[in-house]
Length: 505
Ligand SMILES: [Zn+2]
Image 1: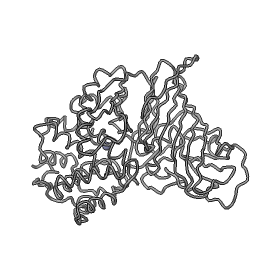
Image 2 (image 1 turned 60 degrees about the vertical axis):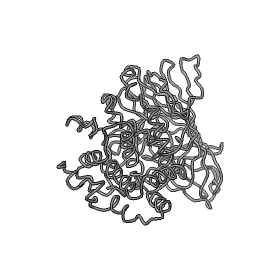
Image 3 (image 1 turned 135 degrees about the horizontal axis):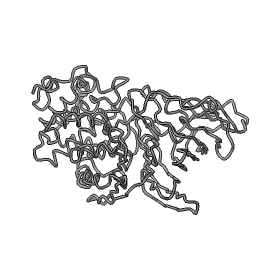
Image 4 (image 1 turned 30 degrees about the vertical axis):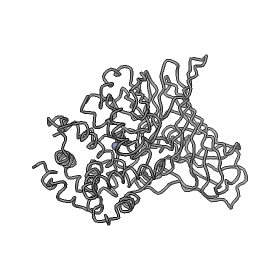
């Protein structure tokens, strides 16, 4: 039995952690725009060529309502932001480089609760309007299909937590706290602090240019490129994330922080951790095994897909952790579990391959994030804990899931994007596949998956197709049984699941 499950209290705590891990989330739909801002527009509405089309204001993903937009593909976000802690105000100028996928006389970005003052498209003022989460932009000239274009949006306001995706109840996106701020949220987060095509189907590289009072430290995804202290008591920090990144995987942390060297992987990947100064000493041991975890996962999954990693801990409890790209973010509550948080640390690291480098095409594919990262916890414990057995892991996983083990994983229920069954039954599905095809074929599937779809998106169907391609076997029955049936298979690896999930064996 895994040591973290030794006491019922620990079991409950772990259950809570597992439920919350990687699912910080957003509250009830909250229309942050007041009537003064809503519908306001400015700029010169130039001549519009009727030949141009209208980019869709939604990608039609039912799990996130209107978030995501059609008609273009973003390549890069350059986000210049100034945060003023005294007034909790954020002022931003975002430059978005994109390519039109159709002729556009109008298109949308997602933005919630912040007032736009101007929009330029290819250097010319564009007209625009704001309504709920939508920023609708009408360029002065039609953007031709396949044309690269740039959009510059100036905006300001007090960011409002949460954008109202279904199935979640916690604040999401930009969090303002007393004297510090941080970003965490899934599935929708970015549009609470910058205009975005806020859906993982449109990944892009990022530059962050964040200005804050000089007595604060800023951390963000990617690598620190420069830090310029101005004469006005303000310092601008520039971070570069050159690898494609889904919008929900941004984190920005502004506060009193220690940036701590966390070692290197054997392959040379540097690990830098970012701890709130008040909790740094307590946090460090929790993350001490990250270099060894990275080594082990590179052996199993192939090369780490980015050029830096690390973990950040903020002095706030948000009920879990999120695998924000190259810098996973944790609430201080996770650190309170000490060594028992180790599997969460493994989970967030594994997401860098599964979820971050290879991202879900649609949110209905969430199990290819959470099932994979949850199975990676077992892969780490099998390597690191001599007392680990898969049979005990299966029993505990089934016990944790309880009745949720009987809910389909793909697609999950409309309100069940982050329910425990997605994590646990998804992980058991991978173990079932491994037993069916053997270790060599199974890890070949995982490595080919990480390599073939690196930096992009993929679907559940892609995973099933790849598994059949590499094994030459018909696996529909296995995937149907583990992902889609209303009854989980009764047995796995010699464990009677019908008894295990009720805790009777
Ligand atoms: Zn996760």
